[in-house]
Image (cartoon, rainbow, N blue to C red; front, side, top):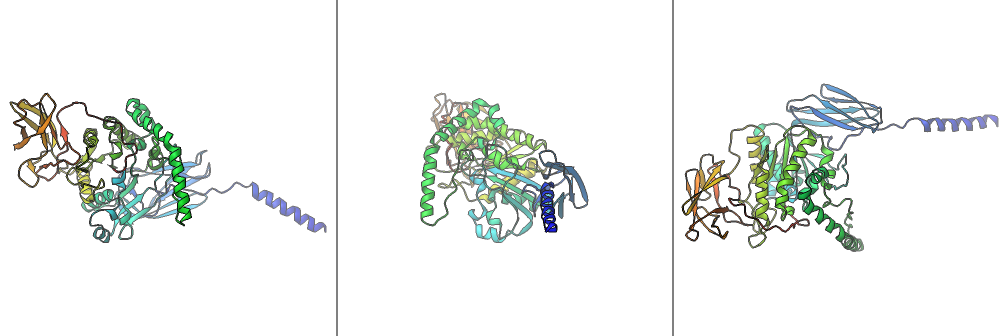
Length: 510
């Protein structure tokens, strides 16, 4: 009897002792550190994660080892030495537990963001079945970020690295994939693309709140639109709940209900949920495709977008990382909306930011599709930008870009940069897309002809011209290129006020 009581007491003591031992904390890493990942070549490689406070963590990549101690918040980080392109390698992270990441390649990593035209997948583009069937390439890897909006910066995302091939490529961003394919075929090194895109979103959601607050006049219209969206949200939520109930009644999965806290229209929310978790993952540069949701706020865009670019560079801390954006394509010929012209101009102004390049797509859009399917050409032109401005290739990457004008009697002479080996009209024949105006600011179709590296524009209706516009429509009939086949961006020589309505917060597409 006494022995039995002592055994019971001993058992209780064992339980108490075990329960007071420090709990083991598994070493964890963000999901971007996973099998098939690509790390950036030739610069230090940051690796970070969490562990128990005070825990020593050992990180090994091939023949290199680095150690760190988790801080009071459990976070740790190391920076591995720069490596040349190559692989596959194994990354091992060891603390109280061990994480082994296999098939790691070293190459160039591009962070790809934007709206629906960046999110648009390979399986949605032209010739998709053929492209997917022929996509096997273990040197191309893609990490697609699950959509997440947050009022505060997150430390991780949902996603995983996938190797290009028939079973995976269909779900890759088409713009990013065709860019990566072109660059990989040229450089013969691994290329990784990280895609954080959300259709119908605004660029203000991709900017940090600090950037917006630093430009109060330009951010004010969007803040006002967000307040309107919040006021309308109860009705939106009620409709969503009703739709969810109907779906459940029909045996269908109910759509996930959004909250104001996780709404993608909230300023800075997409930065917090889909950009911040990747800082400071080493990258080569940025790609951006989107903008339709910002129509109606072009003047604000021309200030906020360059500010966002500079801030992203600052957050990554790798200097003036190259940033290449895609200008809005031609679309909707019967649409009287004039906001696209102003937005294209704002993008052209953004491209004047040091280290920023722009792809013109005014010639490859579709009349009734804001998501043109020819993403192969978008990727090719993005790759031209990167080759010329990030990799140092001596090639032409831009179409003719308006530089200056001079009035010569009843004619205006236009000068351009990026002429290359000469100006031309695509398809031959006469130049199209030019309009000319006098002091009355009424524009008339102008006749245009090439004169060396300049263009002469005139009209019998305008004897005393003062301004020219080119491709200044939603879906312009225009054909100015250089002999390298690259189109001229829409432009205007005047600075007359444009009609803007601060629209677009709920716009889809882009």
